[in-house]
Length: 113
Length: 117
Image (cartoon, rainbow over all chains, first blue to last red; front, side, top):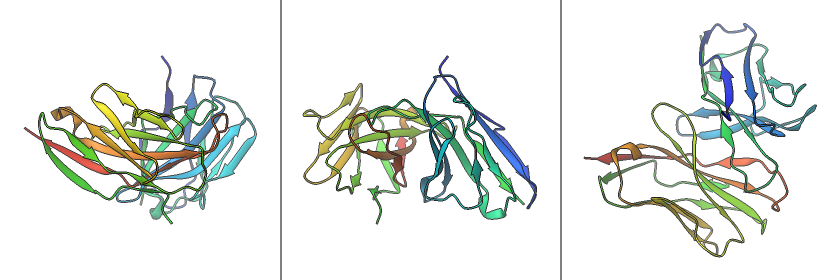
Protein backbone atom coordinates (compact mmCIF):
# COMPACT_ATOMS: atom_id res chain seq x y z
CA UNK A 1 0.00 0.00 0.00
CA UNK A 2 1.30 3.44 -0.99
CA UNK A 3 1.79 5.49 2.12
CA UNK A 4 3.68 8.10 4.07
CA UNK A 5 4.45 6.99 7.62
CA UNK A 6 5.21 9.38 10.44
CA UNK A 7 6.31 8.51 13.92
CA UNK A 8 5.40 9.16 16.62
CA UNK A 9 1.74 10.08 16.26
CA UNK A 10 1.67 11.85 19.61
CA UNK A 11 4.52 13.29 21.64
CA UNK A 12 4.70 15.33 24.82
CA UNK A 13 8.15 16.63 25.63
CA UNK A 14 9.87 19.27 27.72
CA UNK A 15 11.48 22.48 26.59
CA UNK A 16 15.00 21.98 25.31
CA UNK A 17 14.97 18.21 24.91
CA UNK A 18 16.01 17.31 21.38
CA UNK A 19 13.57 15.23 19.41
CA UNK A 20 13.19 13.74 15.95
CA UNK A 21 9.98 13.03 14.07
CA UNK A 22 10.53 10.41 11.40
CA UNK A 23 8.90 10.32 7.99
CA UNK A 24 9.15 7.56 5.43
CA UNK A 25 7.44 7.07 2.05
CA UNK A 26 7.29 3.94 -0.09
CA UNK A 27 6.34 5.55 -3.41
CA UNK A 28 9.82 6.49 -4.62
CA UNK A 29 8.84 10.16 -4.61
CA UNK A 30 11.54 12.74 -5.15
CA UNK A 31 9.80 15.58 -3.39
CA UNK A 32 9.12 15.61 0.35
CA UNK A 33 8.13 18.37 2.72
CA UNK A 34 7.15 19.17 6.29
CA UNK A 35 4.22 21.34 7.37
CA UNK A 36 2.91 22.52 10.66
CA UNK A 37 -0.78 23.14 11.21
CA UNK A 38 -2.02 25.63 13.79
CA UNK A 39 -5.62 26.74 14.41
CA UNK A 40 -6.59 29.63 12.18
CA UNK A 41 -3.30 29.52 10.26
CA UNK A 42 -3.76 26.54 7.96
CA UNK A 43 -0.72 24.52 6.92
CA UNK A 44 2.60 26.31 6.72
CA UNK A 45 5.65 24.77 5.13
CA UNK A 46 8.71 24.27 7.32
CA UNK A 47 11.24 22.61 4.99
CA UNK A 48 11.17 20.76 1.72
CA UNK A 49 13.46 18.50 -0.27
CA UNK A 50 13.62 18.12 -4.04
CA UNK A 51 15.78 15.00 -3.84
CA UNK A 52 18.46 13.25 -1.82
CA UNK A 53 20.84 15.74 -0.20
CA UNK A 54 18.79 18.69 -1.53
CA UNK A 55 16.81 20.56 1.11
CA UNK A 56 15.57 24.12 1.44
CA UNK A 57 13.68 26.33 3.85
CA UNK A 58 9.97 26.86 3.65
CA UNK A 59 8.01 29.67 5.25
CA UNK A 60 8.61 28.85 8.93
CA UNK A 61 12.00 27.08 9.25
CA UNK A 62 13.24 28.66 12.49
CA UNK A 63 13.91 26.09 15.20
CA UNK A 64 13.85 23.10 12.85
CA UNK A 65 16.35 21.02 10.93
CA UNK A 66 15.93 18.32 8.32
CA UNK A 67 18.07 15.86 6.44
CA UNK A 68 17.58 13.76 3.32
CA UNK A 69 20.20 11.04 3.21
CA UNK A 70 17.92 8.50 1.54
CA UNK A 71 15.11 9.04 -0.92
CA UNK A 72 12.46 7.46 1.28
CA UNK A 73 13.24 9.20 4.59
CA UNK A 74 12.92 12.83 5.60
CA UNK A 75 13.21 13.31 9.37
CA UNK A 76 12.32 16.54 11.13
CA UNK A 77 14.63 17.51 13.98
CA UNK A 78 13.89 19.92 16.78
CA UNK A 79 17.24 20.59 18.45
CA UNK A 80 15.83 22.59 21.36
CA UNK A 81 12.03 22.53 21.31
CA UNK A 82 10.09 25.45 22.74
CA UNK A 83 6.39 25.77 23.65
CA UNK A 84 5.68 27.77 20.48
CA UNK A 85 6.53 24.63 18.51
CA UNK A 86 3.50 22.88 19.97
CA UNK A 87 1.58 22.00 16.83
CA UNK A 88 0.29 19.32 14.48
CA UNK A 89 3.01 18.31 12.03
CA UNK A 90 2.56 16.70 8.64
CA UNK A 91 5.06 15.11 6.31
CA UNK A 92 4.10 14.96 2.64
CA UNK A 93 5.58 13.50 -0.52
CA UNK A 94 4.79 13.76 -4.21
CA UNK A 95 6.05 12.85 -7.64
CA UNK A 96 7.65 15.44 -9.85
CA UNK A 97 5.09 17.62 -11.62
CA UNK A 98 2.83 20.53 -10.87
CA UNK A 99 -0.35 18.47 -11.11
CA UNK A 100 0.68 15.64 -8.84
CA UNK A 101 -1.15 15.36 -5.56
CA UNK A 102 0.77 15.40 -2.31
CA UNK A 103 0.41 12.33 -0.11
CA UNK A 104 0.35 13.11 3.59
CA UNK A 105 1.37 11.20 6.64
CA UNK A 106 -1.08 10.69 9.50
CA UNK A 107 0.27 13.68 11.40
CA UNK A 108 2.26 14.07 14.62
CA UNK A 109 0.70 16.01 17.45
CA UNK A 110 3.55 17.55 19.43
CA UNK A 111 3.19 19.27 22.78
CA UNK A 112 6.17 21.07 24.30
CA UNK A 113 5.78 21.96 27.97
CA UNK B 1 0.21 39.00 0.87
CA UNK B 2 -1.69 35.76 1.15
CA UNK B 3 -1.47 33.58 -1.90
CA UNK B 4 -4.55 31.51 -1.01
CA UNK B 5 -7.55 33.09 0.68
CA UNK B 6 -10.44 31.16 2.15
CA UNK B 7 -12.85 33.73 3.52
CA UNK B 8 -15.26 31.35 5.28
CA UNK B 9 -13.80 30.09 8.57
CA UNK B 10 -16.91 28.00 9.18
CA UNK B 11 -20.04 26.98 7.29
CA UNK B 12 -23.19 24.99 7.90
CA UNK B 13 -25.16 23.07 5.30
CA UNK B 14 -28.25 20.91 5.51
CA UNK B 15 -27.80 17.26 4.64
CA UNK B 16 -28.56 16.51 0.95
CA UNK B 17 -28.09 20.13 -0.09
CA UNK B 18 -25.21 21.50 -2.16
CA UNK B 19 -22.56 23.76 -0.68
CA UNK B 20 -19.86 26.00 -2.15
CA UNK B 21 -16.58 26.62 -0.37
CA UNK B 22 -14.77 29.73 -1.57
CA UNK B 23 -11.12 30.00 -2.55
CA UNK B 24 -9.32 32.87 -4.23
CA UNK B 25 -5.67 32.85 -5.14
CA UNK B 26 -2.97 35.29 -6.04
CA UNK B 27 -0.25 34.54 -8.55
CA UNK B 28 1.51 36.23 -11.44
CA UNK B 29 2.61 32.89 -12.85
CA UNK B 30 0.46 31.90 -15.86
CA UNK B 31 1.01 28.22 -15.06
CA UNK B 32 -0.24 26.77 -11.79
CA UNK B 33 -2.31 24.01 -10.26
CA UNK B 34 -5.07 24.21 -7.68
CA UNK B 35 -5.96 21.49 -5.18
CA UNK B 36 -8.58 20.85 -2.55
CA UNK B 37 -7.96 18.65 0.47
CA UNK B 38 -10.33 17.40 3.16
CA UNK B 39 -9.31 16.95 6.78
CA UNK B 40 -11.85 15.04 8.88
CA UNK B 41 -11.75 15.18 12.67
CA UNK B 42 -9.44 12.16 12.67
CA UNK B 43 -6.77 14.45 11.23
CA UNK B 44 -5.61 12.88 7.99
CA UNK B 45 -5.34 14.93 4.80
CA UNK B 46 -7.38 13.56 1.91
CA UNK B 47 -6.89 14.78 -1.67
CA UNK B 48 -10.19 15.63 -3.35
CA UNK B 49 -9.72 17.37 -6.68
CA UNK B 50 -7.22 19.13 -8.96
CA UNK B 51 -7.54 21.91 -11.55
CA UNK B 52 -4.74 23.06 -13.87
CA UNK B 53 -4.56 26.68 -14.97
CA UNK B 54 -4.77 25.69 -18.63
CA UNK B 55 -7.56 23.17 -18.22
CA UNK B 56 -10.50 24.18 -20.38
CA UNK B 57 -13.13 22.41 -18.33
CA UNK B 58 -13.92 22.53 -14.64
CA UNK B 59 -12.67 19.48 -12.78
CA UNK B 60 -15.16 17.00 -11.34
CA UNK B 61 -14.70 14.00 -9.07
CA UNK B 62 -17.91 12.30 -8.03
CA UNK B 63 -19.85 14.72 -5.81
CA UNK B 64 -17.01 17.25 -5.91
CA UNK B 65 -16.62 19.84 -8.61
CA UNK B 66 -14.39 22.84 -8.93
CA UNK B 67 -15.87 26.11 -10.15
CA UNK B 68 -12.78 27.60 -11.79
CA UNK B 69 -13.00 31.25 -12.79
CA UNK B 70 -9.56 32.16 -14.02
CA UNK B 71 -10.16 35.87 -14.63
CA UNK B 72 -11.45 36.26 -11.09
CA UNK B 73 -8.71 33.99 -9.70
CA UNK B 74 -11.19 31.86 -7.88
CA UNK B 75 -11.39 28.08 -7.49
CA UNK B 76 -14.46 27.30 -5.44
CA UNK B 77 -15.23 23.75 -4.35
CA UNK B 78 -18.81 22.61 -4.84
CA UNK B 79 -20.05 19.59 -2.91
CA UNK B 80 -23.35 18.26 -4.16
CA UNK B 81 -25.84 16.30 -2.04
CA UNK B 82 -23.99 16.85 1.25
CA UNK B 83 -23.60 13.90 3.59
CA UNK B 84 -22.90 13.82 7.32
CA UNK B 85 -19.46 12.41 6.50
CA UNK B 86 -18.61 15.61 4.63
CA UNK B 87 -18.27 17.43 7.96
CA UNK B 88 -14.59 18.32 8.00
CA UNK B 89 -12.01 21.01 7.45
CA UNK B 90 -11.39 21.82 3.79
CA UNK B 91 -8.20 23.33 2.48
CA UNK B 92 -7.54 25.00 -0.86
CA UNK B 93 -3.93 24.87 -2.10
CA UNK B 94 -1.89 26.07 -5.07
CA UNK B 95 1.32 24.98 -6.74
CA UNK B 96 2.94 27.42 -9.17
CA UNK B 97 5.13 26.63 -12.16
CA UNK B 98 4.99 24.78 -15.50
CA UNK B 99 3.68 21.19 -15.64
CA UNK B 100 7.07 19.54 -15.24
CA UNK B 101 8.21 21.66 -12.36
CA UNK B 102 7.94 20.99 -8.65
CA UNK B 103 6.85 24.14 -6.90
CA UNK B 104 5.79 24.18 -3.30
CA UNK B 105 2.20 23.51 -2.29
CA UNK B 106 0.80 26.61 -0.57
CA UNK B 107 -2.31 26.25 1.58
CA UNK B 108 -5.12 28.52 2.64
CA UNK B 109 -6.31 28.70 6.25
CA UNK B 110 -9.20 26.35 5.68
CA UNK B 111 -12.99 26.27 6.01
CA UNK B 112 -14.72 24.12 8.59
CA UNK B 113 -17.85 22.59 7.12
CA UNK B 114 -20.57 21.19 9.34
CA UNK B 115 -23.38 19.15 7.80
CA UNK B 116 -26.66 19.24 9.74
CA UNK B 117 -29.01 16.21 9.71
